Amino acid sequence: MREQSTATAAPRSNWLAEAITPESIRRLPQSLVGQSIFAAGLALMVVAGAGLPSWEILHQGLGKIFGITIGQAAQLSGLVVILLWIPIRQRPGLGTLSNIVAIGWVMDQVIHLLGLVGLPADLWTSDRQPLAIAFAVAGTALVGIGSGVYIGSGNGPGPRDGLMT
Image 1 (cartoon, rainbow, N blue to C red):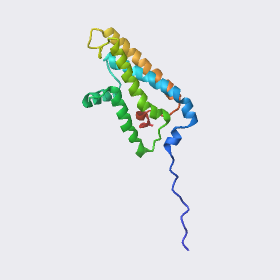
Image 2: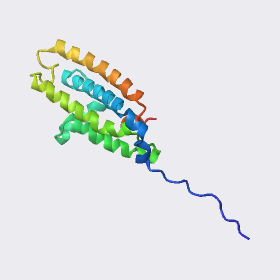
Image 3: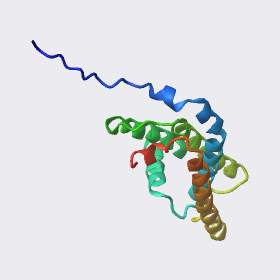
Image 4: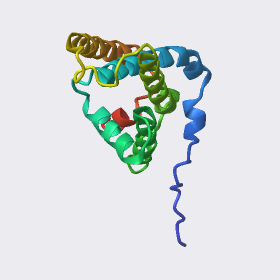
């Protein structure tokens, strides 16, 4: 008599249902506040024109190549990067999903608002280098603060961070 295998395939989970829970929804405002602070800091750094973090350099280049804003490029790269999670079986959280939308959108809004008040798109090459330095320092500080607030929400890593965890 032949024995039948008792091993069964692991059940598939619905990652979206796992990402959107009452607890993650309760923590969503903290995620969004942190992401907004983070994005505002990045926007200040972009306008300062004195240097950017590596991913933002990529986003700035993609924006120029494809004729889109840096925020839109950040959103598109977030979508592409999250697809790279599939083979490593990383699961996004609600904060991961909001990260893709919120950071790019807020960056674009802050850059636009700064343009409305008459600031050039690149302070470093204008005659306002002291302001560029202040924006770069303030932007760096805001990125750090925003990261802490967002990560503290426990709502999942950003798309790029999840690739490394």
